[in-house]
Image 1 (cartoon, rainbow, N blue to C red):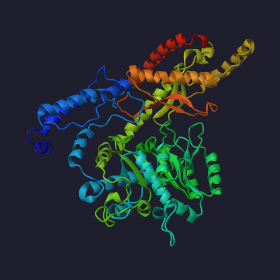
Image 2 (cartoon, one colour; image 1 turned 90 degrees about the vertical axis):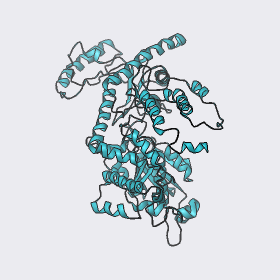
Image 3 (cartoon, rainbow, N blue to C red; image 1 turned 120 degrees about the vertical axis):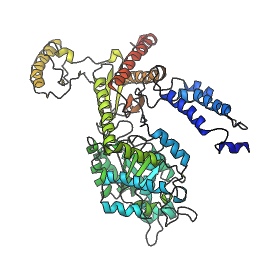
Image 4 (tube, one colour; image 1 turned 30 degrees about the vertical axis):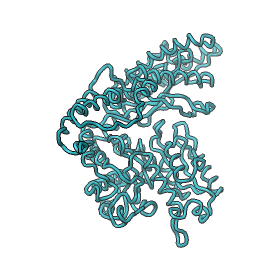
Length: 594
């Protein structure tokens, strides 16, 4: 049969195909003025290229025909694919990868191991368990005896490797739900008897997941799948630093207790995906213990900072979490499809979610499928193992530090331009800002001061707002102000940076709508016409508490270690130029409003 030629190294040598693909990859990565961070085609243009819903009858297994297929793929897909490794891509959580992952992907595909069971993965099962123990030790740092015990037992699991953070968070909530309604002498547990019976037996009216309003959308999926309903996710407002308000959290927990609603999990966030903020994990841990809830930390993005010697202190309290989500394909620099959920107690998944079958994932086996939501899985753990061993702690620490330094550099640079307003300063490597059209920009207060005092380049000027309603009164206030400023500036440390200060009076609702328009249009225009890319989101901020729907902002995410200060400057300068073009168009179309 001709089809068997595709399974045998016969007339078509695999090396020929590999060589052709290698050339495609080299072309994809080759620097070129025509290669942008984002696809410049519109959605309509892309739709027109992908409209064939029929399956071909068959293909002739020869070199020319196979090359023709890959040529078509190159022209329609690869040439227009997003350059996530571009150093001008500073807007999403996907980065350049270390070189060794590309050949590793071929090895993983060639082996085609299924890590659901030992019989189809053998050594990969044990490699996965060992790798999970490395991450577990990084967060929980138990004794050598602890790891020796659970590395060899058929009971217990350090964690689960999943296809991403969504499945990891879902797994954690699955564990939390079952853990909240366990088996007793006269009750078989929620796993067997279901939600309604469990609530009735334990005397509750409902169950809930509680976390900040910046919780990842995957928790909505979890609540839906677990039969809880989205109304039973209670989100708590955040403070000025985008961390969960502890006072309001306690108030909500008391309210739920009085209503006999069981809180199955309190979720702490180690780097919210929108802002990059980190909740007070220590206090959340104490509250979870007090109210009998599982404490889960969603560290899909920021959990990797446990590897940073400089920034791991930001995760203080994460070691108290019952479960932790972390994504390898984010800041552990593995390819897509590598999420992890860790269990503080390896016995937690065994007593809550373990499932067995007679032909596979047997009770007395080392099969990982006993405690994973997913069944068949590729051996993507090899990517994680490679990153942890080849980059190692020191390498990952260095890369993470570079990411934070680049992001803070960009935020400081953005702050010096009157065209932009900072909405959130980076805690790690995410921050938000927005574009302000020229007629709404606040005048730099430094301009009032610079004629009277020379500001040192290494000093940070404080923000002062003079009363300008009365010119004489304003002048007198300003004179007094500058006199005080001279002494203030002389006391500033040489290590502090200089920045331009602006009057940050709040914009009103109408002005915010205009700013939203410009930020949205500029993001779309840069994506469509520019060489750089910054993502966009809408976020509620305490800076504009009456703007209930939030404000439109640029969302910077810098993970790529190839990003340089020149790339960052280029992205910002491009935004300024494009912003000027949008302003001119706006003035023509909105003359009566200006």
